[in-house]
Image 1 (cartoon, rainbow, N blue to C red):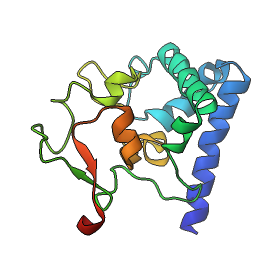
Image 2: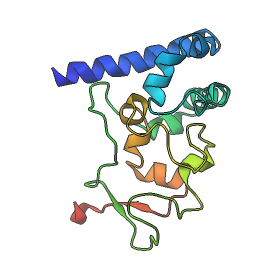
Image 3: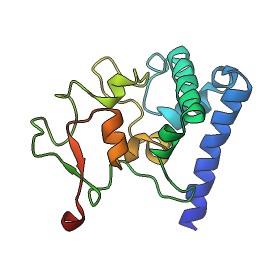
Length: 165
């Protein structure tokens, strides 16, 4: 039953993305409460910057469609449960990491800053944390493989070796 729930939630998110794409992004303005609830439910409407999100979604969709290696970096099954954090059985914090274990504030290479994520508040905190989008798509799973660490030149995470698992 849980796998059916995960499947339905992902299909709902894909439906929102498909509507976004088909309507040229207009659906996000017409159905703003649905998009806000899925992407950043705790954000205020003034924090929810639809034009920035609109541009960002096209950038991500284009990258996903045009770059096979990018698509391959974010594997998941439609029935996978949501994740708020990466899998510590696969990843570990690098011994060279000097920042906090709980966030990436001390990192100059923060992946969300590199992609100019539009869902950050003025203090740099993620407004999407805990949302359907965060848990069911990419953010909550980051990083889950060496390719993602390499893409964002992330100094915090490294893949566990076979004898560490």
